Image (cartoon, rainbow, N blue to C red; front, top):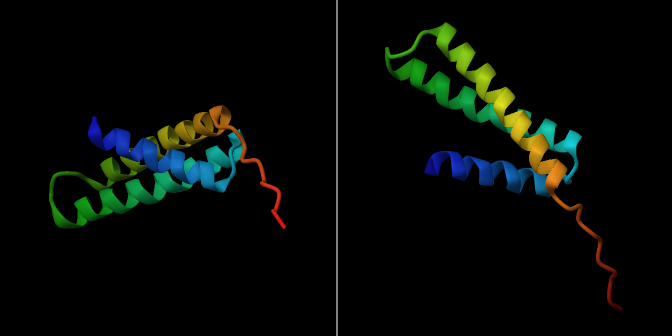
Length: 88
């Protein structure tokens, strides 16, 4: 549970810095989900015999889709940043 919460905070942080909208959230969630899951799964594939290459591909695809959906939700419910006027 803690790992999922931390990953959710990572997606929220990235989406809010990329710009809060559904499309930017979807794209940011997709990219982060793919990079995190591919990095983790291919490392696990290379260092252990617990999963096959087909399982790696399925896990990367599933986690990427889940992350993209989470990013879109974060983008939809986040408020856009308001630019502050410069004080002279």
